[in-house]
Length: 353
Image (cartoon, rainbow, N blue to C red):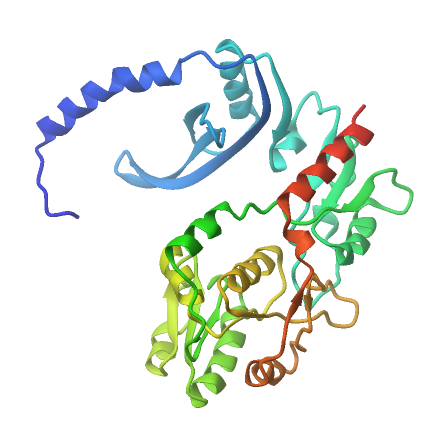
């Protein structure tokens, strides 16, 4: 890959030198108490017995990585081994444990469960899938924290009419540290280019097609249009055709994406969701006008944080907002992570005694 050749012997020698260091790190003693521990896995492909298979790397820790374990997949049995390893290395108590669906298999069940729900996003449906409701109706569930008030209706539907579970609007647990560092390095320009960025994921059914629909009209008006994604586009999208039409489409490294936003006139979202709500706020911080759709007839809006918004069934409204230089008002308190933490701690104090 880098034009450097090494022999198998050299690789073996380097590995033999590293193995004792790795073993020492994996068995080191830990603190007796941790305030917050994240238990999660990263899935990746490895070669095993001449076949490519999926493996899960289990990670504990954020500011400090407590350990790393390799397993066939995520399972309660494997996580039990991880927790036993932490216990054997000196951990006696964890005040808050952040986990995902594995809570369903926990035995015994946790005493207190608080859900942080951020992504009820599809603007074309208001149907609740019963198979997804088990977590809201878990006997240990004490509260569900949503990002903004418009989602409380969905939370109340999920927990059920006679539930004692509290449904609370808490905002986004969003730390600006990373974007602030980028802004210090990449100064947003006052004179914006005729550039519009469409943030999102190129792996979600209708989203790229709506972006292309708008991008073509913007291109006819002399705009440079970029449809970005943190992941590679799905193979069934006609990306090469879109590129031939003059639309820039594809995965972008984060620094390059932020540099685009720092000089773009606007960033347009064509769907509604937690990650896109944050992406549009980052665009705003970098000087681009955030343009985001409104709800449709009682479907989840999720974007009341921004006003005004455009009708997703009339995308030309978004284009007019650029031409008219419409001022966008943002209720910034929902992006204050300190406020989010305060609400979380108050919820723990009141619900988990």
